[in-house]
Image (cartoon, rainbow, N blue to C red; front, side, top):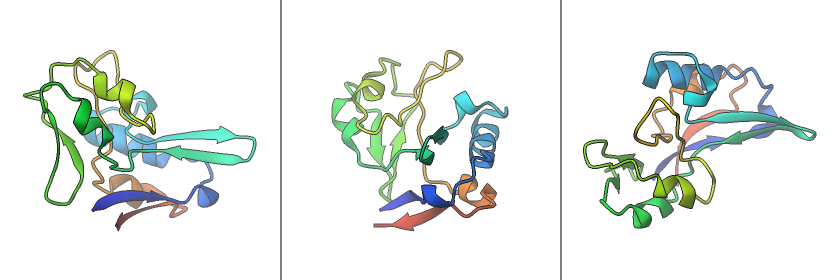
Amino acid sequence: MKYLKTNPSLCKGIKACEKTCSKAFFKVEDPEKSAIRVKQTEAGFEINVCNQCGECIAVCPVLALKRNSQGVVMLDKKLCVGCLMCVGYCPTLSMRTHPDQREPFKCVACGICARACPEKALEIAER
């Protein structure tokens, strides 16, 4: 299964990952439209992103969430009714919403953020 592996100890809070993600998927640099979130804490930085656990799949009433051939949880926007049950159920709080979007969004393990990170705190991995 493909997923985005994080190493918060390498993160310097540059947030190139957030900017690149939102730009790639929404054509705007907006951290609220990024599937990955970086937050500064007293201990350093936390990186929050979908770990592809799939818990959201079971709660979708219209079966709009499925795993692709690489094991990545994907949302079918044509089926999604915007009920946001997946957002409320996500154990990692990494299923996102934005007022501009009817459907939720999440990391699809594309790797664009990993390539943008100058500190190499992110990488696409298999498990």
